[in-house]
Image 1 (tube, rainbow, N blue to C red):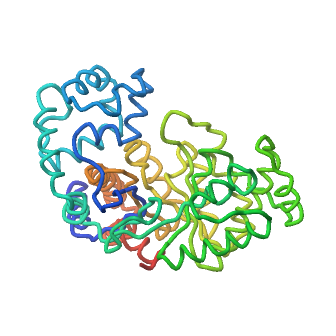
Image 2 (tube, one colour; image 1 turned 90 degrees about the vertical axis):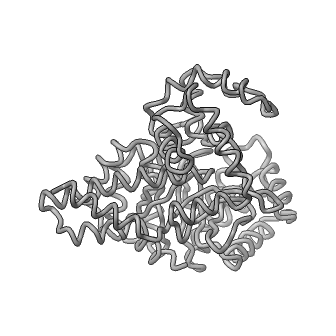
Image 3 (cartoon, rainbow, N blue to C red; image 1 turned 60 degrees about the horizontal axis):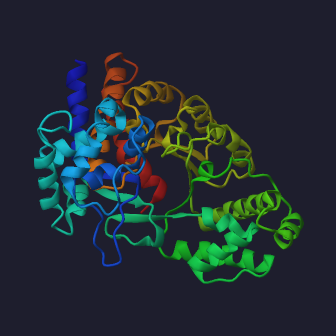
Length: 414
C-alpha cells in the first residue's frame, strides 16, 4: 500500500512543472555557462569539497591551472572513499547517473574517464545546463542568486543579495559599494539615499526577493538603532571600529526591511549550517531572528535550509508567525535522514502552504541530483503519513504539489 501511494506521488511530481526557490547557476560575460568536466562538477560542488577537506584533503589539492585530468584523478582518488556515504556525494552521483549514464554507485578507476568524457561532450553545447534544468528536471521557474542578474530570464528569477549594502559603517565597506555601484558615500544621507535607490532599482530590474547570508560574517543580532546613533557612528567610523560598523550595519538592515515592505519584496535568510569549513554555530541559530519577526509583521521572511541543526527552533518560528516561511533548499542534500525526520514533525506543526524547495547548486547535474533526493524524501514522508491514515491520499498529493510548486508560485507570483 505504501509503495503504491509512493509511486503515485513520484508520478505526480514527475509531471509537475517545478518552482525551484534557490540556485546559483552562473554564466560568463558572453552568456556561456560555467562547467565542462567531472572535476569541475566536483570542485564547484563546494559542499562536497568541504567534506573532502574535512577528511584531510588539502584545500588546493591541485593547481587551479592544472589541465592534466590523469593527474587530477590521481590527486583526488585517495580522498573520495572518505565521503562516499555523505549526502553531498550521493546527490552528485544521483545527478550523474541520471544525466550522464554513470555506471555504478561510486566514482572510481573503472568509470571516471568515461564519465569525464561524456560530461565534456555534453558541455560542448552552450545551452546544455538549460536543457538539463528544463527538460530533465522540468523546472518552470528558478530563483537564481548570482551577482549582476546575469541569467536567462525566461527561466530564472533574480534574488538580490543585500549583504554588501550593509557596509556603510567602514571605509572598506563604502569603497566596495563605490566599486560595485560607482556611488561615493561621503555622508550618512548619501548612504541612505543610495540604499533607497538601489533597492528600488533591483525591484524594477525584476528581483523577486532580497537575500542575506548573515551568519557567514556575523550573528543575527540586528539591534534597533536610532538614526542619530547611526549617523554619529557613520561619521566616526575607522576600519578598526567594529562597534561603529555594527551600529551602522544594524541600522541599515532595519532600513532595508522597511524598504522590503514598501516594495513587497520577501527576504530570504540563510539559517543553520554553513558551506565550506568555517561554521561558527552561534551565528547560525534562527532563534535570534525572533525580534525581527515581532517588529516587522508586514515583512515576509523565508528561512533557508531548515535551520539545521536548529530545525526544532526554526519549526516553531515558522509555525508561530504568519509572515515566516520554511524553505527546504539544500537540506535534503545535506542529509536525507535528517530531512525526513524533521519533515515528518514539521508537517504536524506547520501549515502546509508554508513549505518550499530549492536545489542550491552551481551545476545543472547537481540540481537534478538534489531534485531526485528531495522528491524521494518528500514523497516517502507523505506516503507514509497517508498509509497511517494521518492524511488522506488527496491531501498528501496536494501537499507534495505545494512543496514543489504551488506554494512558491503563490508566494512569489512570477
